[in-house]
Length: 212
Image 1 (cartoon, rainbow, N blue to C red):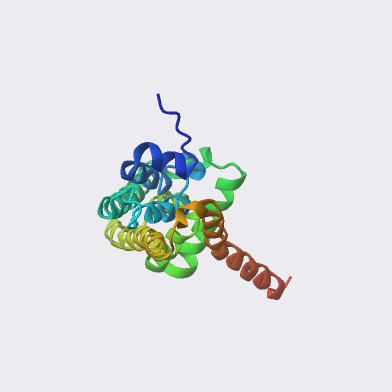
Image 2 (image 1 turned 120 degrees about the vertical axis):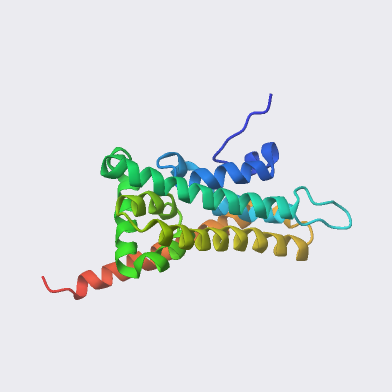
């Protein structure tokens, strides 16, 4: 019997391969509460690395399967999250309003208001925590279904394919790069948090400039 830690990308990939990518990206893209604790960026990038084979060692995962599962999971998860928000409404968000989810919900609403539906749905995909609540919030705010579907698909495909291909490119060009997966995952985490840090800094500046 295989013990799997769903919050550990290495454990998920070792146990389920591309299928694990599909399930995790689906949950992380719109299932409130559950999605907050699952790897997203830190799953896709290592999955791409494991798709790169060398003369000494064959690839552990098939690139086309990982790309397909990542795209399907991201897009389907976003759409389900939207439907949950559309039919569950504010009470759904309220039930998930712990400290971290509550801040993410407020940030998602601010992003949609500031950048408009199209840009927000693409930008939000690349921000951890935010992408989990963005789609239910869009449903609560009654974003037009067609607009949401088109642009969350664009965002989901860009996000998932970019990270997988970045990992694959690095794995194909650097020998034995999978021996350094933990440091690489740490770098991915830091880079994925940059949009949050930039947005927080911008918000502080705006608060200081606004009249009291």
